[in-house]
Structures are given as C-alpha cells and as structure tokens.
Image (cartoon, rainbow, N blue to C red; front, side, top):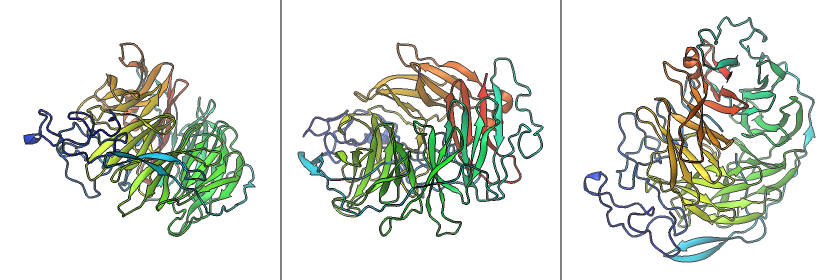
Length: 582
C-alpha cells in the first residue's frame, strides 16, 4: 500500500524492508529501521528479500516475504525481472543469451523525452515534498526522407522458403504426421512449419502477428505469412539482405508492422534500416534509415514501439519518432535536464511512456518516468524514483503498471499509476511471481515480459512453481491487494495469455505424458476454476515442449506457438510454428 504524504512506512506494512527476525524465519514483525526506501508516494520496496536458493533456484526480484533472507548474488549480479537463467526458463534481464534453443520467454516496445513546458513531479527528501521540473529538448531535428520501396518479392539471396511440413514448400513432403495417435477430445495440429536455416551460433526469430486470415512470423532474415486455417502461404516470404534485429511487438490498427534489419554483416554494422510491411498483402511500404545519435548513442541496437500512429525508435540514449503510416519523421527525444537521457520506451494504442536515466554515477542518480503525447513528444507528466531504484519493465502501459528493482536492497516493487502519473497502489502480495521476460542487455526492453496480463484494473501474475502446479493471482490495481487466485489444473505451470469475454485465457505447459492446455478462468463471481478450452495431443507434447524460447497467442479458438530463437542446429528439424485447433 502507499504511505500517506510525509509519513514514514508503518510497522508491518508494505513500506521499507524490515529487519529479519532472529533465525531468518517468519516471525513477529520487527521494529523497522529508519525509512531508507523510496519517498512517500513513490514505490516502496516490495516483499523483496529473496529466500536462500536451493540447488537450482536463482535469485530474482520476487521474494517470498518481508522477513526472508537475502540471496547470494550470481556471476551477473542481482537482476530485476525474471532473474537468472534457470531450467526450464533460461534468460532474464541482464543475462547473456544461452546457447541451444534459447530461453523460455513466450510473448514480446519503447517511448520518448522532455519537450517545452516544465512538468512537475513529486520528489520527497527528508520527509518534505518538493516540485521537480522537467526541461525541454534543444537539439536540432534531423530530417531523413521516407521513401517507397517495391512490392514484396522474394529476393535471390539464397535463403529458400521454409519447408512447411505439409508438402507445399520447396522440400519433399514431411512423412511426420503430428496428428497420428491423437486421442478423442484432443485438439488437432492444424499445421506446423519448420524453421529456416540459421547460423551455427543461432539467430533471433522475434515477432508473431495474428490477423483474421494470416499468422505472420519473422525469423532470421525473413518474414513469412501463413493462412491461419491450413498454414499455406498467404504471400511470398520477404527476405532481407541482412538479419532482422528489431520488430514492433504489436501490429498497428491498420494491420501493419515495422521491422529493422542490420546495415551489414560486420561487427560495425548497425541496426538502422526500417521497413514497413502490410500483414494482409505482404506489400512493403515506406522504408527509412535511422541516423545515429550523439557520442555513445548509436544504433548498434534499437527498440521499436508503436503508439497509435507513432513509431518510436529507441537508441541507447535517445529516441526518434516517425509517423507509422508514412515514415515521416515527427520529433527527437534527447538528453535533457540534469544529465538525463531516454533509456527506454513503452507504448499502447493511445499512450506513450519514456523511462529516463539521470545523473549516472552522481549523488543525483535516479530514474524517472514520463508520459508523452505520442503525436508531439510533449511531456504530460513526470514521476521521479528515488536513487537506487531502476525501472525494469512495464507490465502494462494503459493503465501503467511498472516493475522496479533495487539491487542494493535486494528488493522489488510493482506499482500501478493513474493517467496523470501518480501512484495509485503498490502490489502488497506476499508471493514469488514468475512472468517470463526477454533478455535486457543493451537496452531496458520495457515491454519484454509475457505471462502477465492487465485488464479491467486487475493485474494477473503467475506464481513460481517449485514443485507441481503453480497459481495465477489476480491483484486489484486500486489497492494492490489480492482479489483471488486460481491453481493450474495440471502439475505444470500456467501462464496468463489474454483477457477476453469476461474471462482470463491461460496456457498450461505440456508434460512428458500430456500435451499443453488452453483454459478459461472466470474473472467475476466467486468461482475461478479453470475450464478447458483446448487439450493438445499427448503425441505432440515433446515437440510442443521444445519451444523453450517462444511466442504464444490465442485467437479465434486457435493456439499459436512459435520460436523466438533459432538454435542453428543442422542435425535437427527445428520447428518454427505450431497451430492447434478443434
């Protein structure tokens, strides 16, 4: 819960971390130390002292109680987010990508900086509330010219279309019948696709977009489109001269996407070529080359975010906004104020959020969050976090829900914000949560978590399963308290996918003797027992479970699973996509 203004955290509340009781177990609350956490009204440390790890447990930001003991840090240090690599979900913020088939990270933006008018934020120092004023950009806009490209045509790069596994590709018909042995009541494998060739070191395959007719997938240097019913190509694959290095995680309202690809193949190549694609036709629209920022602000890596008709391209220390329909440059977001620079962006259909890193290495070091007008970049509000707290993820942008971590305190915090940038409530649930998050190495990747859903002012988070089934917890964003929880119907973990029709749709992992499930959990009333929508075949469970790094989507009664990391192993038929239905 949030603390009243100018009041220290109350004993036993969701305030600054308490001293652990003797012996390290759960005991009577101890007298709290003087307030050392975020200011009143700012996110307070959560139940953030992680427990002692077991043989395979990894220190993450999610703790098990306010009096649990701190963990020993691993080789990469304490990382907020999904934590250190751990079977079967390797990969987390700040961790290097593993080899092999990648990490289990199911689903996959970025926003801008301060312009013009000053914006007030609350800063609390020594129990006093101060006004913090943002300053504007004064950099000169660069004006790259958007240009139209030819319609989509497969290039003669030598990258052959993927064998679809159904006899309609370039290879012979695959003799493997994934529906052989299907039992009564089990779903049907509608189609599957094999992955294209990838380098031995592996390749990214980020991005999966589902329309009413097509399932579109990016993989290495190509973008493929398959009919949602039978998997046959809806348009010819698009092949880029270099590997795809970033994508817009969500499609626009006009069913278009933007992908970024590398300028070359050398170590000095940059991720600065943009291409718009129409998902319905495969037609390539405008293209653009993103310019470098100032010193130490390159496009070696970028993040793409869409908010309405605005595409935000985030570099390491700045961002440039384009009109997503025409490719015309709109504005830049640059360094401002007391050594503040944009470190990450996140967007929704109508909202754009920028996270800035300020005063690095100094006494005034802190993160701040700003709400932006997507059309102009104007700062609408600013919220300042106290020193030591780093904004790692946005679980939602509308409404805004932020996960922040504090390495020094080994603490985490999840806060919901109002539309004007004030903390509405902080999650006060004593639980070890485990959404699945992408690697965040060169940038924040604010919207890189899956297995977390926000709908109707409710946050749905999965718990970590140490043995057996886990649970999904529904948290009221009005007060940060638990509303209800639902247990997985199997001995495997259950992850939220989306909210629709007054229910929460969740995906249940496959096991060695059963395929995965899609279930529906009623969100209203008193009954929250999962009801089965789809039971996948046991005969395909091994293949289904091989998507360790994956996207998952549920649309129109079909389950789509695709890989987000190709392992480059030529000795195995690596799957790119699977589609299930009745």
